[in-house]
Image (cartoon, rainbow, N blue to C red):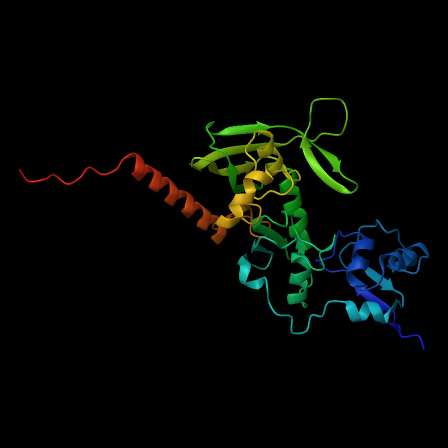
Length: 340
């Protein structure tokens, strides 16, 4: 007997959360567990109708559109492996530092990928959807690296997602990071204006590098403002202000000026990182510290900060303690005066 189950015809009315979304993406969201290839087969055959008419995958849906979805079969194996929402233990809710009816801001722990794929079963967005099964809309506004900690924006309405994407493209979202880098920074405030281009490392790993000025590749502009906050004998705490938002921008820019980030397994210095593991440095020391933007729902300016995580603070405390010890050795207190 075929163990697959068969659903009935569905009629979905497009609400505000799905307006302006592509039809194919709308279907992939609605038909969770149905293979992507099967969804596109339904579209090619014209079995999906919008307001009674056949529609192409790239069609943008409008508010109150009526989407007829034919019966689809969901294999038992897919059904059994799909994440369950019932009783999902909250794992990320405790890291939400701001939320309203339009959006939420997460202080993402290091180690969480923002979305599943490439060996990651469940990322931030999948986990939040599992923890909030009744949420009608929840999407990432932007991304940060898996090992980067700190602020991550999620939209709870499609209109908010669209507005914030436009703000990001136009540079109206101000983003600052905190980063621990190798070497003592002696340049003061510095703007690194170095275009980046994608390259391949090995067979399938994509990386970024500073464009060498030649005619090859397709470089994109990239600009970061670095300001030193604290310096020690071999390390520096920097503020990194992103003026553009390119993949791995801060990491590549710092490596290009000989100040790689501590714990950076792609662009860093493994020999200098190795002894730091005993001091608690076991990940990329990059933290999304602050976001400033105009609230897409209220129009009010909003500014949010995420404090430095414990591993950052612990390493900085060790550096401060070591610096104090060295200062004491250089300038020992004079012995107490002896009575004559």
